[in-house]
Length: 292
Image (cartoon, rainbow, N blue to C red; front, side, top):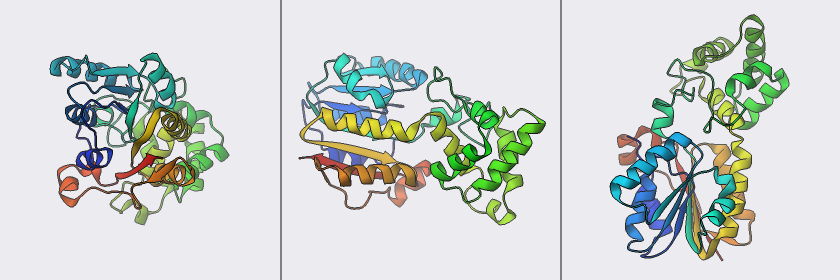
C-alpha cells in the first residue's frame, strides 16, 4: 500500500476549504487526493491526473468504492498537459494544485518496469508505456558523451564518466536489457568505498535514466507554468520533490516568478516519526507558494 508523504503539511499549507476545487497532478494511490476531498466536501471537486494508465485504473476503482465519482475526476494524462486536462473537464476555478514528484510503491514493487535496482526486471522505466523511449534504448544507443551528460546533469553522479565508459564497453559485448546488468556495470565502474555507503551505488544512475526516459525536467517546468495559469488569485501550488534537481527547479520557479510569493522559506521535510513509519519519505521536500 502506497503511503503518501507529508500529508498533514500539504493540508496545512494548501488549507482546503469546503466547496473549493483542487487539482492533484500526481494521483498515484490517491492518498493526497482523498485527504483533500474530505476537506472540500460537500461540493468541492478534484481533478486527479496520472500519466501511468495502471495507476489511473486502480485509482478509478478506489473512487467507486468511496463513491466519490461525482466529485473526483480521474484523467490518464501527463501533468505537463495540465491546462489541456483542465479545459477538457471545464475545471475552473482552482484554489490549489499539488504535485508529488515521487514514485509510488506500486510503480516500484509491482509494475515490473525496472524502476528499482533491487529486482531483476526489464530496463523500461516508463511511467506511460505509450512512450517510445525506454531505458534499454537509451543505454544501448546513446553515445558515451550523451550517457555521461545524462548521469552528470540528472543525478550529479560523481563517477558519470567512468560509468558511461563502462556502459559502452559492456554493450559492445552484449545487449543491455535487464536491471541486474546495469547494477553490475555500476559496481564494476565505481570504487569499493562508494559501494559501502548507505545509498546503493546504482541509485543515481537509475535516477538519471528514469528522468531522461520520462523527460521529467521539461515536464515539471511545463506543468508548473500550466499550473500558474490555472490557479486562482490567492490560490496555492504545492510541490513535493525527492532529489536536488527537482527541488532546485521548483525553488527557482517560485523565486523568479513575480506572480508568486513562496510560503516556505526553506523546504518542509518529514518528521522523524514519519520517516520511521515510511522510509521512502526521508528525501521528500515540500515547497508551497501563493499566487498574488
